[in-house]
Structure formats: structure tokens, C-alpha cells
Image (tube, each protein chain N blue to C red):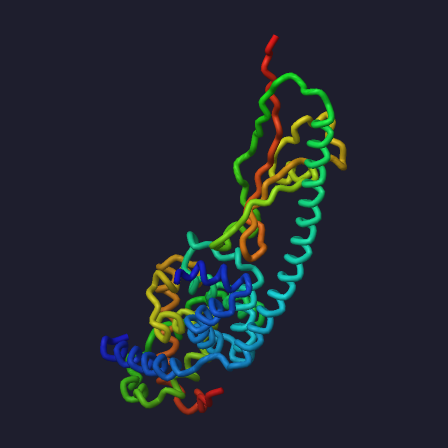
Length: 181
Length: 163
């Protein structure tokens, strides 16, 4: 069923429509919220779906997909909690130190360390890394959610990955245990 | 970043993405939202019941008025022959117009003349538009009790000259 109709039905009390909508979108929204605002991830997801049922007319299919609409709401909820995201000025940390043996430090089995490094990134970079690298969205999809031009998104992604590489290479022990919630 | 390092970093991020994919929102999140859906549905049903009752009362008033007019007309000598005709607006969408409907009905009722202004329509005969005046309206009501659209009706009588 068309997702716009699902939103309209869910907004008017159709629990089955809501269940379909929830099953499709709760996972990506929750994972985004966990990386952006782990202490309130449950609330972010809950309030995103509550907004849908309280204001079913808020979704406009001409302005994007339901996923983008839900991420937009979740993003505003995250910002309410951690503040607005700003691009930090370019620093030396935005370039990768070619002398660091990164190949040896980044291993497939070091998921907890990578998780901790991602979660330590500034929100503006963390967000695009989560959307593009972890959730494997296209630049176009991620830019629509973040509300920036694709060029800006690519720049943030490049700087985010560079900072991530440096964090992983520079202080593997200091990154933390990466304990899961 | 060298190609190899870039690929290593991407592999590591993909591994994290795969690990993340197992994470879902706790059950209490869905339960809370479902609870709100039920509460909202209850509120809407209550509002709909009140509206339906108001519509029923209005319909009874309309039927009684029409019956009274017919009785009075039948008691009077016949007027000059004429043709009664209605002029209607197009159906105008109401807030629930976007909700799909499988069956519906058109209900005719009298509504305050001020309702015309809320749709950006000029009140006909504005000079005698008393605050308590009413106009006739046809409302499309879905089988779920939600009103989808309204049109306003104005009676117009064209008398034929026979003399």
C-alpha cells in the first residue's frame, strides 16, 4: 500500500496501517537516534511516530518520501536535545596522517571501537556518516534529510571519514569499550 | 586517504552497519504510540457521535420545516405556475477529505450563514444576513462518520408568465 495512504490511515486510528508504517521505518530511525542521541533514542523514535498520528496531514508526498519525512521529524527531536549542528572550522584533523598504520588498526572485528569512534564525531559529521556509510543511503537521500546541497554533504562526509580514520589510528585504546545499550 | 585505507575504513563502517542492523526500537515505544492511537480514535469517535447527533437533529428540523411549508402551501390557492430550481456551489473539501472512503451519503442540513464566509464565499443577500440566519448545505459523510465535502444550496424560483 502507498505510504502516504498508510500515514493518512494511521493518523485516523488504523492500527494495522500504523503497524506497517512502524515496521518499515522504526529500525533506521532508531539506529539514527542511537548514534545521534543515545540517551533519548527511544523518545526520539516515539515522538517521530506520535507526530505522524497527531498530524497526519503534515506529510506532503511532493516534498519527499515518508522515510525522509520521518527522519526530518527525528532530526528535529535530536536537535532539541543536543542543540543545532554546526560545521566546525577546517583543522588539521580533517586530513589523514598518511604515516599512521591505519590498515592495521581498522579490522573488521573491531566493531565496538569503530562504533565508539563514530559516536565521538561532531554531530554534523556523525550524522552524514550514519546516513551514508552505516545506513547506506544515497547522497541524494541523505541530503534531502539533512537539508543541504549534495556538495555540502559530500564535504561533511569526507571530513567525517578523515576524522574517523585519525581517531581510529591515533588512540585506539582511548576510544572506549563501545558497550552496546 | 589512500585507496586501501579508504576501503578499509568503508569495510569497517559496513561491518558496523551490519552490526547495527540488528538493533530495533524497544517494544514499549510501539506500545506507547499504539496507546495514543487508541486514545485519539476514542476522542474522534466521541466527536463523531456528537456531530452525528447534531446532524440528526438538524435533519429532523429540516424535514419538519419542509413538511410544514408543504402543508401550508396545500392550504393556499395555487400561485402562478412556476419552476423551482436549485443553484449549488461545487463540493468544497473539508479537513477529512483526504481520508479514503468506500461508502458515503449526502446529508442536507441548515448551517449558519457564517459557514459561507469560512469557505471564502460571499453570503447571498448579504444585506439581510442576520447573525442567526442559516443556509442550506449538502454534506458528504463517509461510512466512518467523517464529513468529506460540503456544497451550499440556494433555491431559485423562476415564475412563468402565463398572462
